[in-house]
Length: 222
Image 1 (cartoon, rainbow, N blue to C red):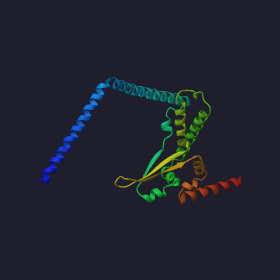
Image 2 (cartoon, rainbow, N blue to C red):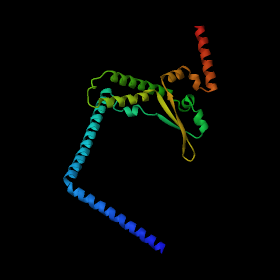
Image 3 (cartoon, rainbow, N blue to C red):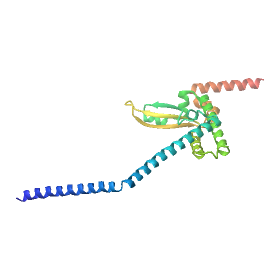
Image 4 (cartoon, one colour):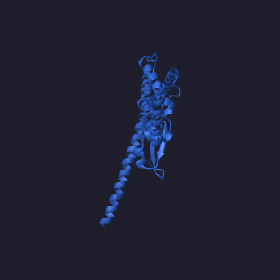
């Protein structure tokens, strides 16, 4: 008997809740009908606001794109993204130990590209000087969205610092277990040029010493 009364009470509670919800819904509908003009004005205002925002955002984007392209043309840096890359080459190694031990000497011995490095470092140094000179004094400062372009150009400056090699440890299963960047700036390139023996085998180094000794002896004879 108690169970039946409990079930009846639960059923009555649900019915009452549904009546309350239905009443509230009906009241809301009636409120909207009574204030249809106000809701229409609000809806139209929101729509106009959204459309205005989209138009302004598109205009700003177009202004930025046009000005950025114009300034890059002025600087002769239309291909700036290919000149200033996060890294210039990627080397895959097969162990953590190789990754940890991989250094500038190992890279140059494996790739024999000191001349290429020197050319890239010099080119990027020229790009940096070009950008910095432009930012210090130019005729574009009063143009709309110039500040945005200025910040974009400043973001490129760290990429003008030398040549970068990305060393990545990839397992046999194809998983990336770590990586690092090796950076060659102008100072590093100059040091390797002044010390070619750093990249030589022991035999090559001894051969170079003998050649130097021979040149010194011949110089003394004359």
